[in-house]
Image 1 (cartoon, one colour):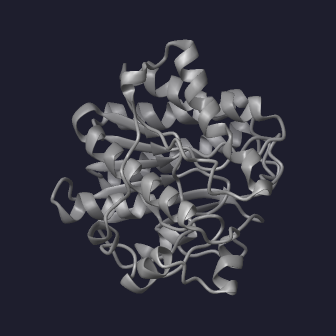
Image 2 (cartoon, one colour):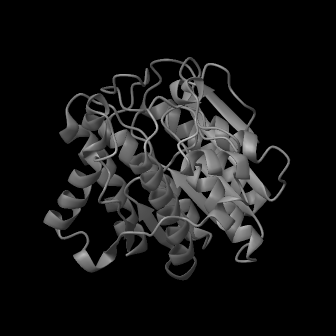
Length: 299
């Protein structure tokens, strides 16, 4: 199992934003402690090169990131002050997801301990996302002929608005988002399929909706590759999620996605996405369940 890991996850971030980011190091530590992975299965990527980024993001925006050229409004929309370290981190995360996609083509599945930066648009960032790692990796696979159709399964509690906007006119990419109806972003984009969830939805109806819609997508669209954003901000304990999923329900969600894809022999690259429960142990356990499910199903 290939695990992409960003060891500079905390250093570029201002003090107030470091708590939710510490989960990335703790996830890796827990997976190693359990013996679920070995150190040989953890890789740190180099920054994604500009020529590959330019297949998704505008050259003007890429130069702004490199030259620290974002204005005050653009930084407010992102939610982080710009810095060379933050740009470097996003470039590493993006390449990590791209590397995962290439590995998954050979081995079935690969997971990025970070990633899932689905609020980034082609020409600007939003919601703590500078670059859209799934979009960059999907366009890489398509442009290099490694697959002909891509499915993006976004089960973070927030709609993948940047991803939906980037692929609005791309028929080879199907964007599927199940998200909180009354959650950020408050102006939604149109995915190929959006399931907007009412507040307080719990495990049973959530899983029923996912099973029905994912089955239909897979059998109608027939993707050659899938990206899965496995955000754990769907948990009832999440500060911002507004849903009522349990840890067990979240685990069943991951198992369902992996079983569908594995049965159909569709390779899958995974990114962790959001998770903002006050008790970081809950976040780490929920994210580790995604890795446990992948290990159980893919071996």
